[in-house]
Length: 315
Length: 136
Image (cartoon, rainbow over all chains, first blue to last red; front, side, top):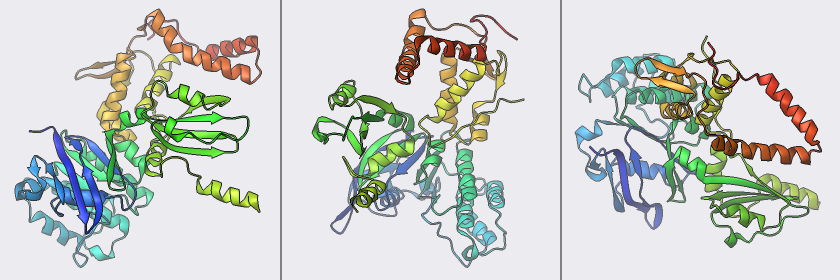
């Protein structure tokens, strides 16, 4: 048995002439909680749909639980749980109908009725309610219950936190921690809620504009992205960008530059010192800030706040 | 009474480090005494709502520093106080903090005597038991 639950190699997908996923190669360790991060439209859902055999790759390959994603057997599909984006459900069915419908696809020992009831109760779902009448949080709870009850060895969730209120999001987090009770069960999920990602994920990947930029343990990622603050007597000089390898983002104001740098080298502080700053200090960097540095435009850019400030000053 | 951890996501400090720092501080301030039991990895992960691997990493760091003992099947306990670093290693670890204190202190206009006095008061407040002494 491979120690990777998911492995992709050069996985690529075009829609007509537009590339949605560009040669993505990554490995998801078995037993990990793996977060897939990226902006809307960066290719996360396309990647997930290919892994589940719902979308044919244009090029490249992927194995999921050891099987080619283009030819997943029914038995292997039965070991994968999928919580789709925005929680599609059969709207005219009642909660209890959906339960018996889902249950009918699984062998009795695999179906965990207790888990279904526990999750449904936790989200406050009445058994008689029709799926179409549920709130967003309740829909999330129901699709989570339907999926967790199948004891998935691999749980794949496409932006499960989207549109959830803080209470429902907390319950989602609890459900994910619950899955980690089964050693060897893997969660692969996409999300924009980085505080929750920080709590629950031990690995992450960042996709930007269809391209995989990062795939690492969360801990390793955090040690490899650093931010420095440089203070100057007057206006900071223009940046010799080419001279600062790994520069992800630069923010400037009246007499300070803040530089976020990937893979800083031992000589990076000296390179920064050569810019002529009065003082240089390393700033603490949150996971969210590190991820945002990867997702923005390369190099120097004003924030919206600064752009509007400059305009105000010109008036 | 169980030791209360407080964890926040979204800060500059990784969660495993927050756990390590809180245990370390609680030990030197005497809020956690040798022999006190910490929750299991699983229990603490579910209490704090964090990945169990994160708690396991914090515990293994604490064990490596000699602050806790993990006893298979029995649980996780605060270890008897002992000095586990060599003199050189202790000097290496304190150096960057001294550097920062001196730089920042001078920049803020403190004299050396004022800094020493402030540090002395700080240490007196923490009231560290002498190294190697066992307390129960």
